[in-house]
Length: 267
Image (cartoon, rainbow, N blue to C red):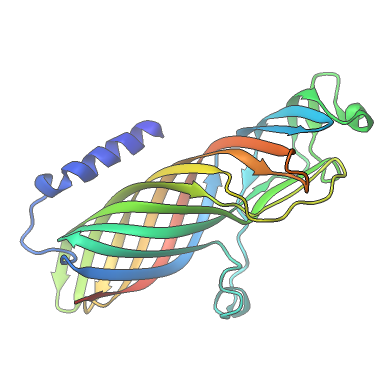
């Protein structure tokens, strides 16, 4: 996926000269704000856990997102709109078709339960019998629960380039490409070998991402947008217990599909 990030970033930089069109998708000076939801997929990752009486690494750990069932209660009630996997972003067009943005991708990451993975290092003495003769271990919840469910918060800034492909009356259909970087502020839900659960926001690492999408605009005011984003997340400082000495670290690639709606306005 790294080569895709490099390629798309290069395209964004060159896009103002590569693309030519008679009419901009969005004009310089336009602001926009959007809100919506996402689905995610993650590559397997190596996770290293270290504490006062344990130091071990799990290999090829599988994880999934956590999609809430769609309902008015879960998605549209104002006191619960941050419960699902959500996206919020604001942007400003510094020139025709070219915008800078700031947003939060509120994803969720849940380690799959009861999977068997390879382990090396040492665990608490009372958990040694959990390790199989072949150096594997079953990740039952009484040994390890590992989630970023409130959430895997990727706070990032992006640059986006738009191209108008169709315009008739009140309707515009635009394509977009973009890329950016940011930091991870997860609220991780972790219990490990009987230690007290830790569940608080913590600056854990950084992310890089690139994306492409489709934007449907009505009256130059209201738009629907869908994007596919790929990115890399590296978190070398994940809090796991109440003790600040206990940490985990992991890195993985992600794919994100978003479906959002928003408003744009021009002064």
